[in-house]
Image (cartoon, rainbow, N blue to C red; front, top):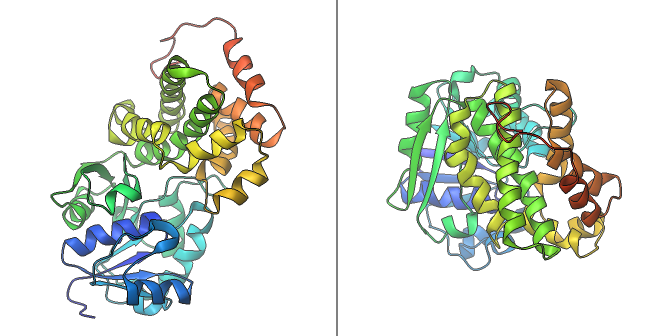
Length: 341
C-alpha cells in the first residue's frame, strides 16, 4: 500500500466502513482496522462487510488489517469510528503509531460511560495531542445509504478552522457534501442526545401513537438537546443545523436507525437485555440516556423525555406509563428560556 495519501479508519463497523468508502472514493489508500481476522479477510478478498452492510461492494483501495501499527503508521488522517464505550481503548492502541501532524477525526455519537466525557475530550487525553488537531464529523447520515453513495450532507467541527477544512477536503465528494463548523460542543452533544429521542420515537411508533405524538416528541426533544448543549457552552444555532434538527429527524424516522428499532422493540414488551441481544450491535442511545441524565442534573437543566426513558430502560417503567407521565406534566410556557422548556 502506498503511504503517499494514506488514511486510517478505526474500526470496521457499519459507520467506519461506510466512511472508509467515502475516503476511498477520494483516492486515498484506506487502512481499515478491525479486531477480527475473519472480518479482515472478508473485506480483503470479497470486498464486503456482510455483518454490517449486507452485500455492499467496497472499493479495492480499502485494505482491512488487525495490525494497528500497519493501519496508523504513515496516515495523514485517522478516523475514529469506534463505539463510545470502546473509544478510549482504541485511541490508546493507536497513539504510539500516530504521525506528528496527523489530523484525527471522530464520527461517534455518544458520551463515555462513567466519566460522561465527550469523545474529543477522550481522544485528546489518550492521543496526547492538542484539541486543535481534533475534528468531529456528524449529521444525518445512515451508513446503509452512504455506502450506496446516496446524497448525504454532514458537518465537521473543530476548534481549528484549518483542521476542519482539511477534514472537509478529505471527505467531500459529489455524493457526500461536507460543511464546516467551529462549535465542537454543540455538534457532539446534538449527535449524542438525538439517539435518546430516537429511542422515544421508536416507543411512540411501537405503541401506535401516530404522527402528532412523534412531531411533539421531536420538537420537545430538540428543546432538551438545545437546553443541555447551551448549558455546556454550545451555540444555540448549531441545533438548527445538520448536527441538530437534521440528524434528529433522520434518526427518529428511518428504518435504518438502531435506536428507533430498539425503542420499537421495547414498546412490544421486550426487556432491555432481550432488545440488545436481538440487535447484535451497539445501541448508543441506551447508555447515553444515563449519561445525559447525569449531565442534566450536573448542569441543573430539565430533560423530562430523558428522565422518562431512563425510567423505562433502567427502572422497569412501562413505555405507556412513561408517555402518560410526560403528557401529565404541569403547565409551562414553550419559550420560557431561549433553549426551550
